[in-house]
Length: 101
Image (cartoon, rainbow, N blue to C red):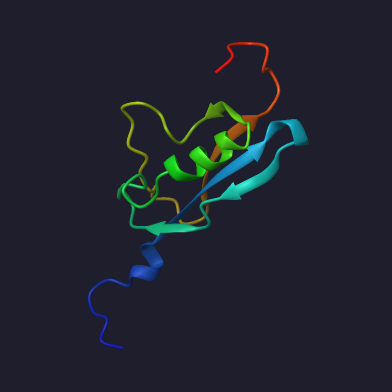
């Protein structure tokens, strides 16, 4: 127990990225699990949705909304110890008539 100066446990922030099926009332397809970091640290450096999205898209889903992967935005851990940051990626197999891929 050689921890000095700051206690990282009191400052560690948490975030989760959930991938949900909009066709099934928001049923969770997968999740990043709880990610931990210090306030201001990049969540994007710790976690990438690229591989889960590749697998999910191969299963026939398309992204309807994604509030984690915003072009030009680095998601960072907040400074709020009380609230876990939740990011959601909504996916659907429906709407295949619009914009065939």
